[in-house]
Length: 115
Length: 114
Image 1 (cartoon, rainbow over the protein chains, first blue to last red):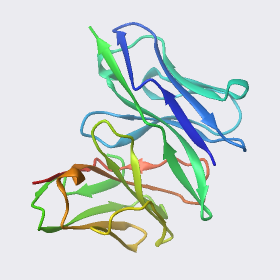
Image 2 (cartoon, each protein chain N blue to C red; image 1 turned 90 degrees about the vertical axis):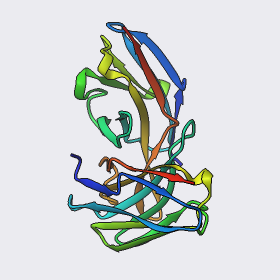
Image 3 (cartoon, rainbow over the protein chains, first blue to last red; image 1 turned 120 degrees about the vertical axis):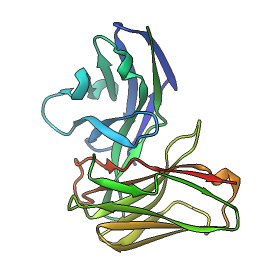
Image 4 (spheres, chains in turn purple, cyan; image 1 turned 90 degrees about the horizontal axis):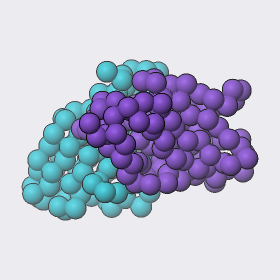
């Protein structure tokens, strides 16, 4: 079964610093991977997704992630953090169950941005 | 606006009350989900409906009862809840046959059980 593990429940950075949020996956087949963001009192929204093709994926708000098969990783990065990036970030993979594809989420990483 | 609408946004209910949460999507999706999000806990998948049939029920207590009358609407009926059921309840939808398609979420219902 496909699954994802997010390393670190909290990441704290200064405004303008590099953001790195870690995600490792476990899959016996080529995975389809996603990053979502959740702002306070909101639902989740898609930041970016990897399907096939280019391993460096660009998303919204200046975020990008790189699929590395050799490391089974899909880490999320942003060169320069902004205060508005403070939110909860979820890595996700699609699982097959009963003939359907179901999104399955990691535990989430809370990004804290200091002025 | 994500295309998935949840009502109400906030709900306070007593332990003996019966209430329902509603979710609606007009994105042409054929799968809908209920998730529970509690403070300091991972996102918990509760129920999955694909093509209006329930395909997943993750050992959720019977005081939570889902209903999917058509592919655009999903309900979560609540009765005799406990204080520990207080949480943010999120509805989502997607294409169930699309392995590379993302889920679209509503803004959630903040439920408080008193």
